[in-house]
Amino acid sequence: MIRIGWLLFPLAILINCGGGDSSNSSAKEIQTEESMDSTRVQLSNNKIKKTGQIISYESFDDGEYQMGVEPSYSGKSGEIVIDDITGLHWQDNEDAKLVLRDWNGAKNYCKELSFKGYHDWRLPTRKELNSIVDYSKSNPAISTYFQNIVSDYYWASTAYLFAGNAGWGVEFSGGNDSWAFDSNAYYVRCVRK
Image 1 (cartoon, rainbow, N blue to C red):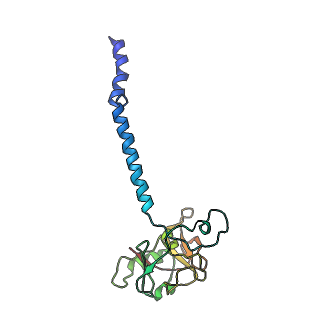
Image 2 (cartoon, rainbow, N blue to C red):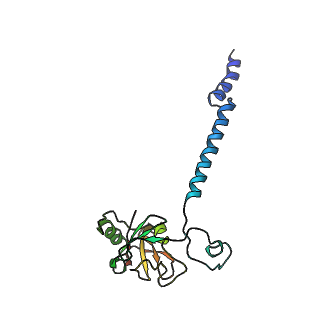
Image 3 (cartoon, rainbow, N blue to C red):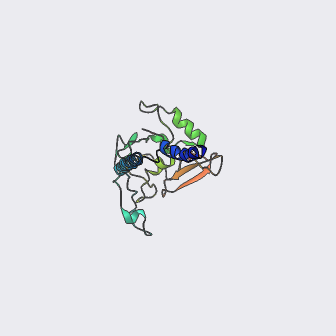
């Protein structure tokens, strides 16, 4: 009797874990396929902006693919520029070409900014700041819809992970991004959603 119990024990575990029920595993497969399809739909609906690069310098770069949606901006130029693709609102008053801060000072400046009735400004992430670079232009590498711009570095809120006291910045002379120590003085352009 003990020997039979030992033989039945693994079978009971297999049935209780769903391994003996084929309808249960196929339901899991169908559910996984359905969730994968919904993920594909979500990814295909994302809008990616064109970078502005029109010449291909090597295979498989932005100049070769020419993919994405043309950048589109609205709002009152010289005050707030609205990116119609991302929905981000960009500060574009005179401060955007005058205010220089260290990294923490830049984050605090945006956090405390009250401009055009909005109080939810923040320092943009590296990706957000890169999203307004126009690689078909230089000095400055940005749409002419932005009126207040310096062809220099602007702080992003993204930390540089390989140095404890450093963050990312985007340079609007040619559109490069680079990290710098947080004590450096860069320009500040705040953003809100």
